[in-house]
Image 1 (tube, rainbow, N blue to C red):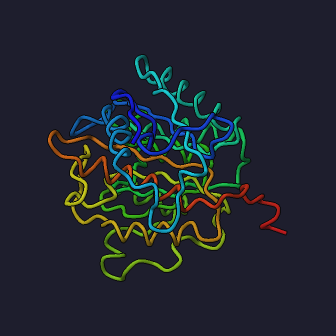
Image 2 (tube, one colour; image 1 turned 120 degrees about the horizontal axis):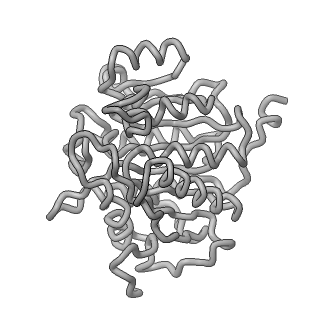
Image 3 (cartoon, rainbow, N blue to C red; image 1 turned 180 degrees about the vertical axis):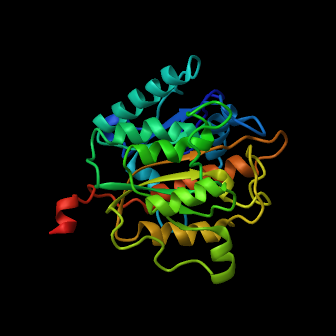
Length: 301
C-alpha cells in the first residue's frame, strides 16, 4: 500500500497511482467552502475528510474497478475572499477540468459550490442538453436566506435562473413559497413522504428530461442515522441501498457530465459520514458509462 500526504491526499491514492490529468476520466476537485452555513458548522473540513476516507475504499466496488478509468485529484480551491471571488475560482477550476474532457467530481463544502460548477458546464454543454438531479433533504429554492442570495439554501434558485431543468429526490423540508415555486416552474420531484408511502419509483425521471445529467448530492439526503455529519440533518432520509437503486435508475440510459457531493461536516471521533461520502463518490464513478455525452440532437431526431 502506497503512502500519501495527510493534507488533501489524492482520491484512493492508497491503492491507485493517480494518472496525469489528460489520462484521467475523473478530476476530483476539493472545495472547502463554508460561508453561509446556517445551523451546524464544519463543511470546510468535508473535502479533506472525504479524501482521507477514500484511502479505505476497496478498488473493486463489487462489479468493477472505476479507478482504472483514471482519477486525478486537484489541489483544493482557495476559499478565502468574498463570495463572488470564491465562486469565480470554483468556476475557473471546473472550466479547466472540462478543457481536459474530464468529468468533474466536486467535493464540498457547502451546497453553494454547485452554482459555479453548473455555470462552467454551460460553457461546454448548451441549454437543454443537461439537467440537474438533486438529492437533498431541502429544496434550496429560496431567493435569499439570511441576507445572502449565495446562501446554500438558495443554490437551486440560482440554478433555475441558469434555465436548467431540475429534478429533486428526497426533499422533506421546504417553505410554502418554495413549494409554490416548484409548481409554477414545473420542477419535478419525488419527496421523502412520497417514497416512504409508495416506494421508490422505477423510473424517477420523466421521459422528456435531458439526456445528460449533473448529479448534485447533498449528503443530508441520507437519513442522519447513517450520516450524522452534516450541518442541517433531517429525519426520514434515504438509506444506502435506497440511494444505490435510485442512482442506477436515474442514470440508466443517460450520461453523467459531472457530479458533486456537498455538506459533509465531519464529527470528531466518527468516520461514518465521510466514508459514506467517499463510497458514494466511487459508486457514482462506477455508474458513469465510459462514453461521450449524448448529443441532444441525437435524442430529438
